[in-house]
Length: 110
Image 1 (tube, rainbow, N blue to C red):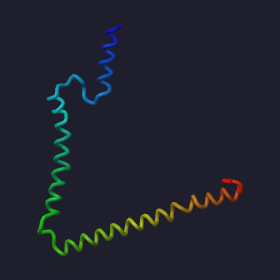
Image 2 (tube, rainbow, N blue to C red):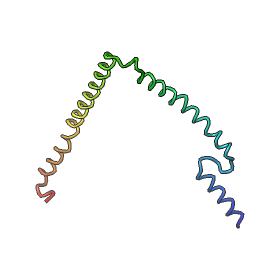
Image 3 (cartoon, rainbow, N blue to C red):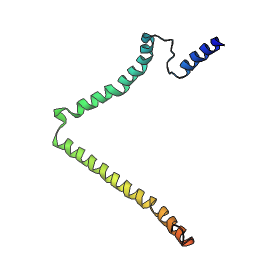
Image 4 (cartoon, rainbow, N blue to C red):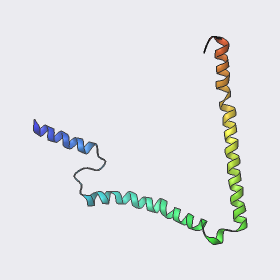
């Protein structure tokens, strides 16, 4: 019966870990190497290039700053418009349904 206990504990340890328990540290590192290298190539390298181009002194011209200001202004305009449209479409149904509940049953909520 104790051998069954040892087997079930080993299975339990294997089921609750993402990486099998029997792998050495170097094997675990190699398992992480592929996703980390993909992250570096697909995310960090393009991000570093974008940041390098963004904060370059030669790109800080008046026309570029005006373009950035226009883009930010349009972004805030779209956000305000979306918020107002959401409120206009989203608030009337609860208000009218609340009014209809009180009209159907005046003692509701007292």
